[in-house]
Image 1 (cartoon, one colour):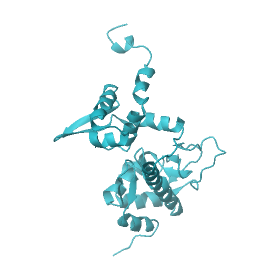
Image 2: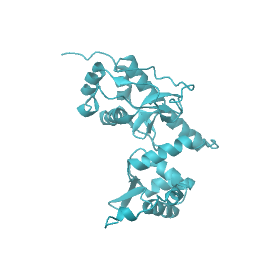
Image 3: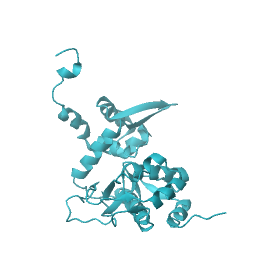
Image 4: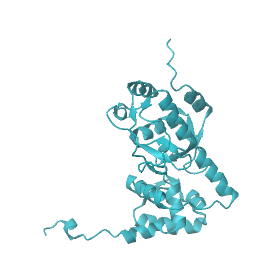
Length: 253
């Protein structure tokens, strides 16, 4: 067998790991961190709906299972997801899980904010994400489909990565997005673009490396900003002007 410790390992202990997810309060903590941000324990207690004195127990379990990491900044400790693998598990569980009913004004307000605009595993989703994708298609920056959800196609399931449409970045789009300041590495026209079927809007929004790069750049440009609800996003006045100009030829001096 040699000295390789991996040779002694048995099957993955899925049940042990799954136990960390099997609590609604811890699930809410993980979803609050799903946009890549680091949040303090007090904020996570609010999202989980527990007292500040209780959240430490749940965070300890998530740390033990290596689902989150923690870093000290001054007097506060900030928690974030341990990696993209955890995001992938949350995404898969979200696709399989039933939707919970909305029973309070707070839940209604939160749901409305997330439907308007949110980050979906670091790319833009909700009404704003669908709007952006359709504008990119209308401007001929992206080609290959019409962003519509077709429930009769097996590869077009709600709240899931899309597989039925082959979207591609056009040369016009690559040029325009390079002017936005996107890295050249994500503007390869040879790569098929990834997309998700938005579960609130029942339409496609851009995902994958390009979707993430565009969303990051929109934050940097000040076109979008974080909302008060975790994962929610709001369009700024600068962003409204920027979105309106998509597809408009740049001015020359």
